[in-house]
Length: 122
Image (tube, rainbow, N blue to C red; front, side):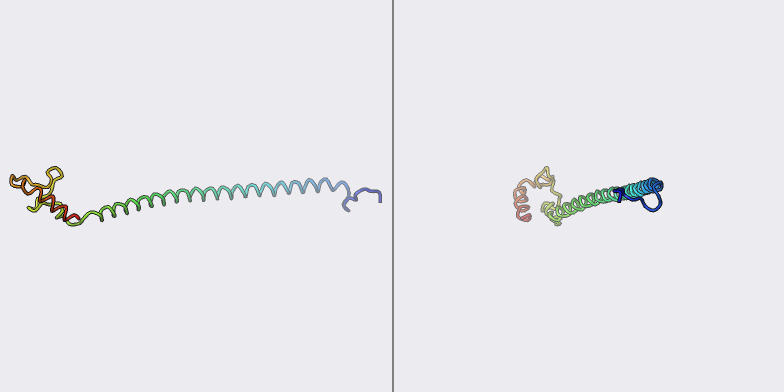
């Protein structure tokens, strides 16, 4: 043995061409894979963007439902009985007159109206 690495049976001139061909094949495969991964990443990014939009819509719906629930709870906390908003004569109570109507004989009734309203409200 002379210490040299033997060439394949095709002869020494064939080896560089085989190496070039295998390099070209490797580069082709690498290019294909890079393109495939770019398409895959693009698809994943589209999915992420879609999920972000869906998430934003769901968050809006949650906020709207929370507002509706708070509004319903607020309405439920008010009495449905309108008698609390009228004086004994059936007139609507104004926030400005303390429950008295416009007739002159209602001033003596005013403390009674307020007392009655407090009792009914509790």
